[in-house]
View 1 (cartoon, one colour):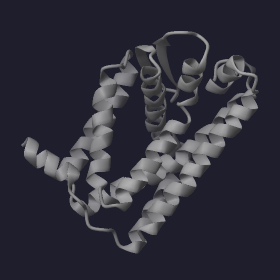
View 2 (cartoon, helix red, strand yellow):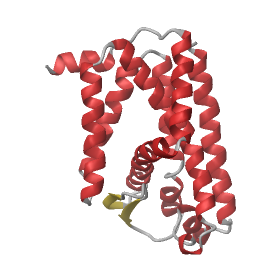
View 3 (spheres, rainbow, N blue to C red):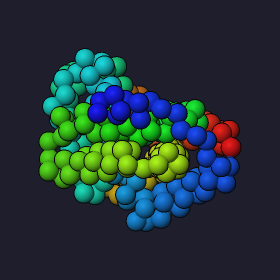
View 4 (tube, helix red, strand yellow):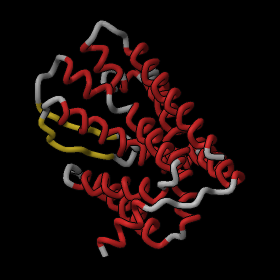
Length: 235
């Protein structure tokens, strides 16, 4: 069974017809910009956002205490270490760009025919996240995502796998800059000020939160352009 799983995950899927690549992109755009669709994709983006915090925290030598995902699509990653300095700054910086970077990586994999590998990589990430989740809602989100993607990856035809992987890549590329725009909008609410990644970065550096938000937006838009070029280049 393991050999079959490995072969399926590393196999190359046939390219989609040009029209289906464009349809997948349009479907992802509609999904991420509709109220209900955005909320669904935002949960996945938050999962990747917190995974980005966690990965960089470990890389810079901080100790992870756990991750929480909330029903309002927010999340929290708690790590222990120096409260200031480059390590803390890098950890805070990693969140908003993470979904866009994963979207860019997914676009590269999908454009080279590794649709199944893209989906199985998400399953592996969910399995690792289960070790770090510290609340029931977060556990539910990770389990539903991981089990759902695993079932699709195991049972779907190569054509369906490719369509799903294209939609996943496009969705992450589209949702990342929108999340940054939502961050800017949320800062107009006084209760949200001081708690966002941008506000915390402003407190650790001599740069304003607006500059950090602008940097997040530039990174996510660069990933959108690069990922779109990869995906459309396969047309």
